[in-house]
Image (cartoon, rainbow, N blue to C red):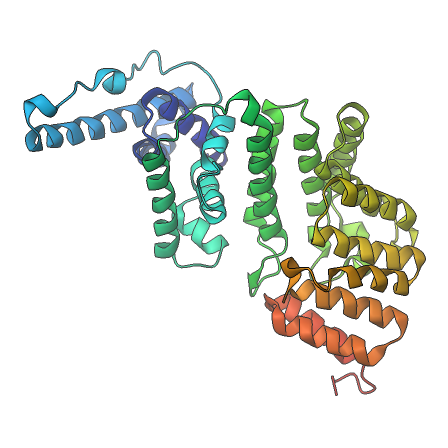
Length: 413
């Protein structure tokens, strides 16, 4: 039932927003309807049309709330200042809960509106579209529930204050707005796959939610190459999750993972997705990243990896969507294909890039390539510098262990 409710939540919220136009009030009403379902359905049975049931209950909650609010305003305002509410209070009908339209994509556009901050986009997407409680969203990002509640509340107020309507973006804005939606889903997945802070390397609830939401977008836009590419990238990357940590939670790098533990069903689905979309759609960054992930996943052993092909894909990706993180990964591939010095030379181009200033991954990659090149002392210093900068405890332990392995006694000197 929990899975069903989470799947229906964005559809119900979208239906109410489309009908009444009050996002903040609609979101509260949907939460009340979901709570009613969790208490009533186990006893009374799941309705024949659960979506219609939720829309009806949420609509009643919302109209009651709006009537109460309008009554308060009537008491506070003069009759001349009052305007009739019009269709805002159109009663919901049990028999006709509204068109059977999936408004999930429109809701995603609203939650990822450019007027909202990146943090608000992430939080609101998980709360309103993902169906997570405020406590669950707060836990996923390791912040107090009150902090997350304030963040979500500010996002709702921003939507109301700026008059953002519940409607798809105009045609000229569609590509850019869809790009923001996909980026938010990508960020949610990344935070789940490699948590930026805290005691755990990964948070399965976030990766699972990102995959679920991206599947929903792919279902609504099956011919969009980048949507398919992002879904393929998530599947191919998340397939390795079972092998990324040891029983004690320690990080296991890609080259050392037990590939027999990878999720082969996800790999097959991801490879099929990226193969189809590359053949029929204009090439985009997510498709290229998915193609790189597919090359990794299709290698039976680490030494079987087709590094020259990965280098070629990174070169194309850098031309299409230049980014310091792309360059960082390109340097690793270059080192594996042509030797560590080639990778180190490429890293030199990032020394003055302010976007990576103080980022532990630059130090970690440089240390790894220095280790491959035989410069043990510099590699140790790099691993330790990276360990100081990361806020992820599993990554810190891993980096310190790498530094310790390079000392004669294996204890870090």
